Image (cartoon, rainbow, N blue to C red; front, top):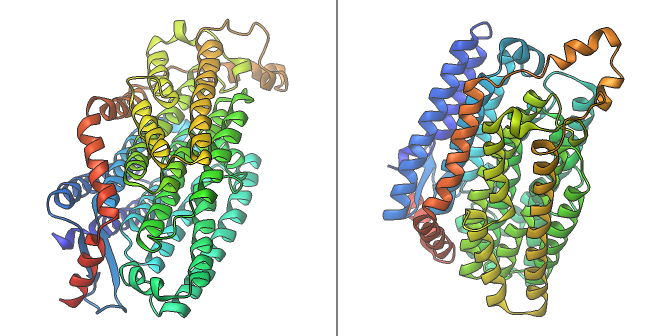
Length: 515
């Protein structure tokens, strides 16, 4: 069973190589990509089942002895993240294959898109399964390299500008990560996380605190935690809808996963509770205020993405089992919901000709299916009962109340206000884009188009291909499964949270290294 651990990484890298070798065979590229992601979903499901029933799995790659070897580890948390990420990736890939050939050539060239997309998932998989900090760094670099390419597909001025910002921020966080790695290795002689769990505790408390803050800042940039989130709302909305969906769903959550893993495994006695509570409150409130002020749906969703990361940081700050379980459940839920909303926005853009609320109206009458596809995840994001968003937020509020400090109660109140403002933002989209009256005047972007080209642009409001609608509907259904099966899934999250506070992860890695 341990030998399954490298499969998600190797399979996607192999698939990327095959897809790259077939630049003039788009159908074969799509088939290879879908088969690879289907394989990753199967392996992730097996890992989830095994780690839940038996315990963590560990493999020292190449059978190199510790501490020289590279360790891959799967426990309940990493298996769940891997499974959800693979499902999202497959749905997004199917959505992108539904686009017609003209659009594919214009916005997402197939010859580059599929290999790069698979490489991105290889990086995400490697980050979730990494058992040492250096391998985690490699996972981040693989997914960042792929994301640079995907973000600038098409080469428009907006995308190049957004990609440049993204590259600069990513280089900063990667540099900080390297400094953290060098410092930790110099202080302890290892970067293996299981070994660090024991060795970091032997260091002077001030050195431990310095290393902890370095790692926290590094991963907070990647997770877009305020005040390190300014880059995200300008970067994500410029990319094609499938790319934005997978970025919004997955990339920031890899940063959240890294924060959970390092804070619980490497620094179990130093919670930095007040610092994280303040970051959580500011991330929630400032992010949602930015969302409410937007008239463009993609930018609005980007701000809600930032805002709702604050909920996840709340559970990490609380650091008790209730808070951590709620964070794990809410993170898995949010990956799905946020990716779904960005895919549906791609359909809105296609059907309505724009994603600006000033240019939309009457979509509910024009396309009732599209209205349903937007309404369900939007209410889920706002946390309306009985959706899984409400269940996750309720768990986080319970964790904050259990901590019971004045600051924790203030963050709980901030979380409730943020939820109400999220509902306001979603109601704004619903009221104007779906129920509102279509604009009589030409949209602002069309006033700048030469008169003889206006008809061609308006014709861009095409019907939605069944494959794109089906992929979005699949994700809506997957998001609803978090509500329908909330009981077993929340119990799984509670067991995952409990295992974060046990020695099972460390024992599995060190025992595998001795064999």
